[in-house]
Image (cartoon, helix red, strand yellow):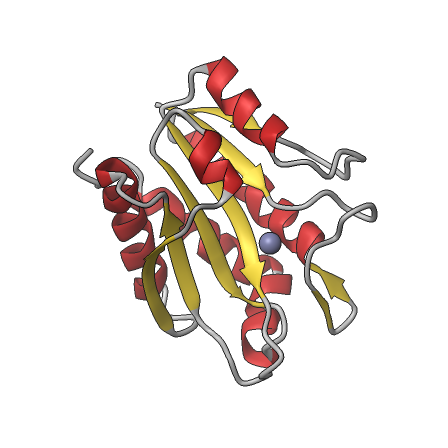
Length: 177
Ligand SMILES: [Zn+2]
C-alpha cells in the first residue's frame, strides 16, 4: 500500500499547540517518522509531507503531495490542546460523508485505544483542509493532549511515540475499505 504520512504543523514557523516546553510540530514529526519507518518495515511505500522543520505553513501542499503520489491512504498526525488541563484522550477524524475515511478512522481509533495509553474520545468528522483536499481515504489523528500532563508524558517519550506508531501500523490493512 502507498501511504502518505502528514506530520502536522511546520516547526518554528508554525509550531501548533505548545505546552510544557514542547511543540506539537516536533511531537507530530517524531511520531510520523517512527510511523514511516515501521510502515516501510511492513513493506508499505511511505511518503512524508515533511521529514523535518519546514517554512511552509500552508495546508494544501500536504494534500497535493498525497494526490500527486497517488497515495492509497493519508494519515495526518496531530496532538490536541485544551484550556482545561484535565482534558485528555485520542480522537480520529475523517471527512464528513466519507465511508472509506470512516472505516479507516474506526480501525485506527480502535487500535490506539487498545494501546491503553489514554482515553477514547471517539471517531469524529470534520471539514479539515487536509481531509477535504485529499483524493484518497484520509484521517487526522489527535494522538493525545499536549496540555495534559499524563498524555504529554506519552507523547514526548520515545516509548510512547513508538506505542502510538505501532498501534496505527497494526490497524492498517484491517479496515474494510
Ligand atoms: Zn495540530
